[in-house]
Length: 287
Ligand code: 2AM
Ligand code: CA
Ligand code: CA
Ligand code: CA
Image 1 (cartoon, protein in one colour):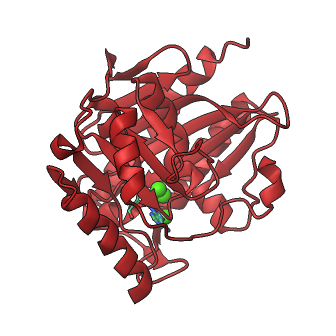
Image 2 (cartoon, rainbow, N blue to C red; image 1 turned 45 degrees about the vertical axis):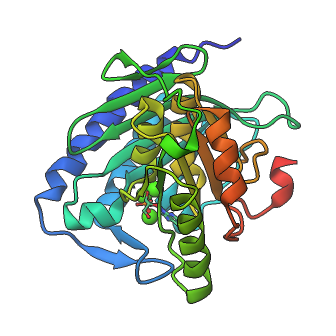
């Protein structure tokens, strides 16, 4: 089995550098524009940070492939192949960043595929909380850590004692909002302790890894929102899966994560799906 520990060290160094760029940009005036919808925001810092991360990694690993949110938005094909692939969200929580709301992260995941028929193997994940300097890291088979301290998910099995996290997607049409609110209503009246929205999918998922919340679900997010966090949660002893309860498909734009299988199953049972399509344009890519 190949040893990817050198990649983890490199990813940590780059995430810290990228985080510094984000931190100093928070205090500056921001150039904000929108992409697919008026609420789908992007800033020049998103582009700058993605360029920094990809160019630094490409110099180190010229044969590797890259998937990044802003490159994908600019038309670079979002595909996982047999080649080692870095999956990057330069700023997760762009809307928070625009408002200086302190939930913003840099996320760097790394996947390899050894055989065409196998699901992508997520090897490592690094998520850096740019506002408070918290660093989440994990490597497959070697545990998950927060600032070097081992992470452990919540062991709670009773959904009535669960704190649930989710996010609002970019689609805000009445039909989508009805399903979103219906899902929230079912989870609140399950009953659970509560539902929270923090505006950063990757940090919400890190809270599942640290045991600060019991479950997370979301429709509409992308592979760069899940890749790094999935390794961190699994290495902290948690579960990451499809919203149907089946295996996670990184490109499916939907996810459920939980500390225990029992809580995951309860959440899965409550959810009505919202269809966002897929991240990869060719569904056979993952066949
Ligand atoms: P971003 O800031 O990198 O775009 C807030 O909505 C959270 O959901 C953020 O983590 C955001 O990531 C992510 N997100 C981005 N696009 C989304 C979409 N279309 N649907 C759902 N969540 C999305
Ligand atoms: Ca975005
Ligand atoms: Ca994101
Ligand atoms: Ca982003």
